[in-house]
Length: 299
Picture 1 (spheres, one colour):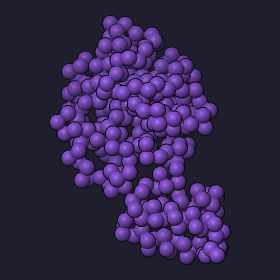
Picture 2 (picture 1 turned 120 degrees about the horizontal axis):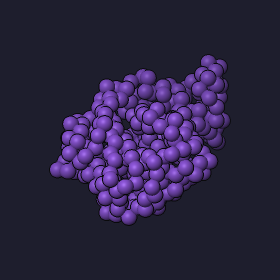
Picture 3 (picture 1 turned 180 degrees about the vertical axis):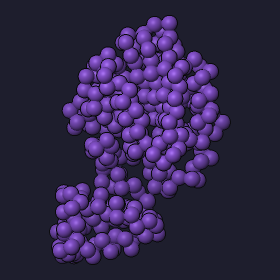
Picture 4 (picture 1 turned 90 degrees about the vertical axis):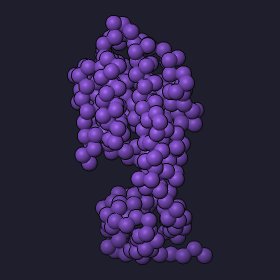
């Protein structure tokens, strides 16, 4: 017979179990509400009410919660535990094959939306290294007049998740399997008044691994995170080379990159040396240099 526990007792068990893994109370509370709202299929206010009333948890739901609690104890990210992540107020399917969407990337998407709200019908977008598809899908939802969005990644498994997210959010995205480092040049290009290339590529140097929380490097895909210390700009270089090679005479190209704050000067220098103009670098909400925008017109 399954045990039956009140939700307030589960809350105390939850905090006690994870207090050594997540030391801040606020972070623990966030995790608790993400987990319970998902499995109790209600909002946070309803969970608050259940806590105040010390309501009993259905034994079968309780069993699921306990199993997920042990996963959290092993540093597995909450997004993988519940199988979804929030981005731009929307839910996205995620698993260990794709990088978990971050608030910093929301800021990058917001920048694109601000820049292109008035001319979006004249824009095509290339999302290089799409992962869960969150960038492409958010842009299509917020700028529905965009005609063409191409989302690119290197594996069928990754693109399968992105396609599910596009279907769930009822948007048309063109997905293409391409290895950025091997064959990016093969992507066909159409002439458009404005082309946006956006990418949140791998940019964490291997030497910086020690600064990451264990739930990041233990579970999130290595290939979506890390670059070699000897060539940390490898993905940026490949994308820039592709733009210079394939976009001759096609119109204006606006590029938006998420970047590593520790090497933002190197990225800035690379953009200047490769002919980009109107280069602007921005800090994220935490005050780190996290994104860069530049424009190039190749004749």
